[in-house]
Length: 602
Image (tube, rainbow, N blue to C red; front, side):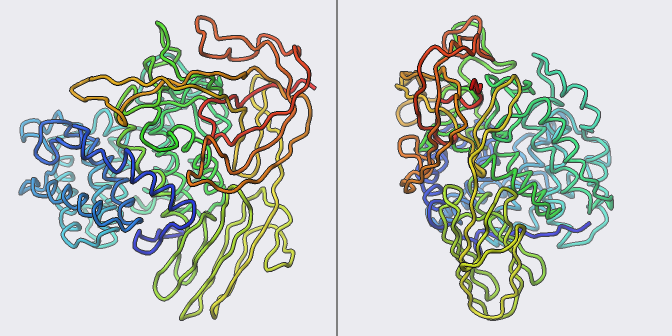
């Protein structure tokens, strides 16, 4: 099965509208400045320094590179090249590229080999630097020789993430059909973890750290069959759907995540999900759609991208959480024992690197790669996968999409072309009353045979509704957006030094302390949608672009046993203790403190 759709590059797709502003905020903040202040990037062993020589520089570059090219930011492009130049300058004659001694190769976890080849592939697709294919070839050939000879073996993270190497393997196999590449693929799969054997562990999460229940590994794993089946000459079975269904049933959240703090954590709305998992789940869905063309993966991608991603990063994108919670009434250090299964008491704070620094480096890929998934192509057909504001310019065809989606459901396409082609628009399953150029059309994807310059005006309706959640709770949804009761808060800034890093503003940490009520239950079926303009901060926590009016009454919810900053998993009582009042619900991604899963009492 060949991929149904192919990705465009950052030279062909450009963000416009709110999407460009979101990427600009990212470039102006932590993502665009890590190389200036964070020792694990600034002084990394990858560029000849004495700090981290494993995953953090490749992680950071994996997002920094497409961000730089999408924004055509010459300073960022130059800084990316500086890192790539340094990395490839240290490549050994036999192809080994990671910063460790020859004697240390056996004990070096080659997850870093898999990751750096993926990052180099991303760099080539953005820069067209013709040095890069030869560098990747040598790295992969050396990896093959070492694994085939038994000099090294997969273990730990390399064992758990073997499929990540297939991004580079597939790239190289398209360029040179040498048989050692499929053999390398077979070796990696044979030595790698089979997640089908771990399914029983997903149904009853334990307070125990394991590779096969680690949330980031699982989110990466979902694309494993999609990226590996062709080169392994195996049939695609949609095993990802089966595994997704089990993970959702036993660990699902309202915003399409699976709880994992940092291993699977069940269905409780007060367990967390790691930010790395958000980024990797999005990346898996992008590849699953490209492989299968199945709309379910694009719709699931929207749910995660428009809710979970902005929710766990501050408006200015200088700080982020390690884990987010569905019902998150405070982000304060836990006194004593951590609430989380295998994370520390500061994992939900907003900061430079709460809990671990992997997310600091890795969250950078999420928005840029979402932008790169707006349009895809196959032969003479182009599909608008994600209706986000973008412009495509490729091979004589230009398509500009102006929209404020997912906040508003109107879309203006302007198409110019010097040749005929087929243009498809994916329509979400929740769309109703679809209209094209003022005429009603039936539900489903739209297809246009384009022969000349064309304008397409598209609108559809969506309805707000209550969705049932476990424990007799409910959440509110409207299209791809989930809505929460927002909680007002005060911030407490922490500036300090840790591990040789001076945490001074804006690289500091924050606790969010609630100052408004949060203990509500819905008491009517009224949901009134209010549209606002999109702020300079698209997912603004102060001026959300869309709100929903709902009727609520206060209840005696109570706190989780042993804590005064965590609501109870379920309310102590659902009996109302106040009169009905009308409140505004905010999009989940705009509400940094929130109650998302709450009861309906009338």
